[in-house]
Length: 168
Image: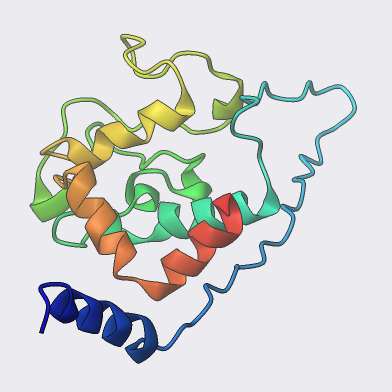
């Protein structure tokens, strides 16, 4: 046998031994524009061009807002401290986070948040997209790092489908 016989054998084995399966392209549906349904006198919120609001994103956001998956012990959600019947506050002086930990600033109302350009009393977050990351990693709120949260979300098939719908 020549020195090329063995590599040639493996190459032929590899090429003919493998079952060719073309990669199926996933068909994405077009995002559904979101209608703010505001009164005529109300201005539209400024929406980042790179992150337009769609009905799919709103559905995903509502699920995330109400799901305790964000917290380390899965015992609190955003809705725990931002209750619709209390103008999206919790009615408390200081909020209670995961494991009963007491926060140091009250839960502000989320009403008209879409019009804000700075978030937190010190303006520490410059967009709603950045603000939402802060409670997750804060030890007295959700106490769950963003990488660990992402791992939890990846393991949930309903979130996989919703993220795919929302962001293709």
